[in-house]
Image 1 (tube, rainbow, N blue to C red):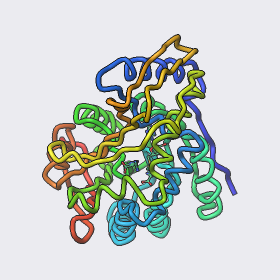
Image 2 (spheres, rainbow, N blue to C red):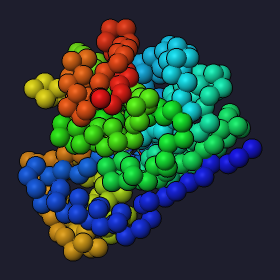
Image 3 (cartoon, rainbow, N blue to C red):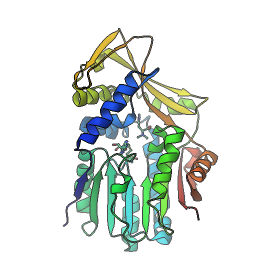
Image 4 (spheres, rainbow, N blue to C red):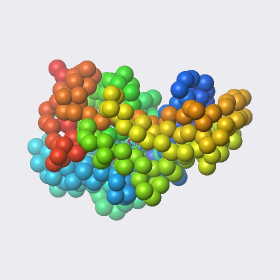
Length: 325
Ligand code: SAH
Ligand code: AVI
């Protein structure tokens, strides 16, 4: 049984420099902001896995059921030789696609790509046992910087970007990333994109403020990640988790608000900041879409919607697209 190979592009100075620049810019701007990719150290990846198990977090279940339903048909006509997955996490839902593709006997390799090495290794252990004949090649990198590190395509390629992780970006970043993804697609290749859909906020808001406090712990963990990376002294427990649906922008916003004024020092970048209880640190947006918005977004990036699948009640959407002409 072959074991997973891993290429790690985040061990270099570049990772520190990017974090230093992101954090300096984010904490000296108004409002204060930190990019969501810093949620996912080993602990953050574990906390995300726990979020997917809380009853309020519907996106995981809805997308999972939808993938189970469409995988056999899609794999029957598409017959990919290779599946590349961006922000692959635990690759749990992906198994429906891998199972169906392996049954068609065309799939040779699976390339999970994530900022978190620990989650790729964990996923790898399960995948090695389940798919002994598959070539497993993990890439640890930032999909906004390292897409060019993905190995050359080896036959028809399907790129997956699931979980509505695209919703954690602002509009301009989404188009930029989709344009980069387009360069990974040859004329016969496809992108399968998962997007959470606009629905009643009484369903959305609890998904981001669960009763067990797992999402709150996930949010606060980002301050630990910043402390570890930049030798900082944030006290995560001095902050409250806030999550609300912004109707105008059709997105959940997650923030951290201190109970009392916090003076924070980040030694490695020689930065001191004050955060007062009248302000927040904005850690994440999670945009919700409609079929039309997804189609427009794909068009703007030079991609064309080929198939649209929605979960009952428009709970979640999956789009299959390919590069335009
Ligand atoms: N696709 C999985 C995981 C979603 S969580 C699912 O649907 O359940 C988002 C995943 O994207 C995490 O595993 C996180 O580590 C990864 N991620 C977030 N920002 C990233 C970035 N900039 N580059 C690469 N991976 C990223
Ligand atoms: C990874 N991403 C799509 C999740 C989301 O729903 O926006 C991250 C998350 N944040 C809080 N809960 C889950």
